[in-house]
Image 1 (cartoon, rainbow, N blue to C red):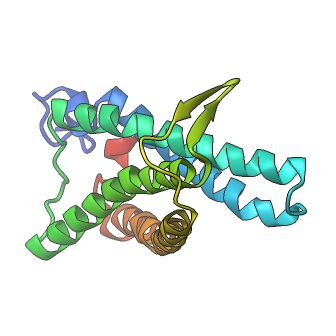
Image 2: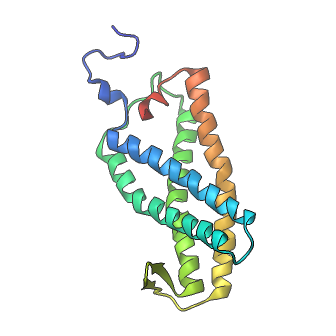
Image 3: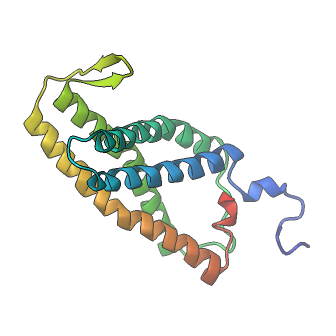
Length: 185
């Protein structure tokens, strides 16, 4: 019996997420990091300047990319069985993991939606090159600013949830020595 495969008759892939799930996980992780880098770097540039506009628009388009990948990611996640964590988690740790993952998926869905809603309410549409995707809503700058404040607050809170996710993975890998990280590599 191999030390890396506790079930020698099972295919090694059964101990990892599908290739599609793994690729989407890492792509979306990189996009979320890029979105945070872009929006925090806006303060490096003068208000109204072209570089500041570029990083804000970059943040917006990265958010759209994250939003566009959420459904394929969820479909890939549920199309294949979830590989078991070896050794198994106790019920409280499993619950904490499930709650954190639900929060992460909610963030990946709701943050881009709030960002798009802000642009719809503030600008009347989403610019697509020389075209404009018109807003289904009337202009409402006051509501746009309230949603933007919520978008910023949720984004700030998710620094901690993302940090918790990373800390948990490191705990699993280095202290618990289970296969949580290996399932996603």
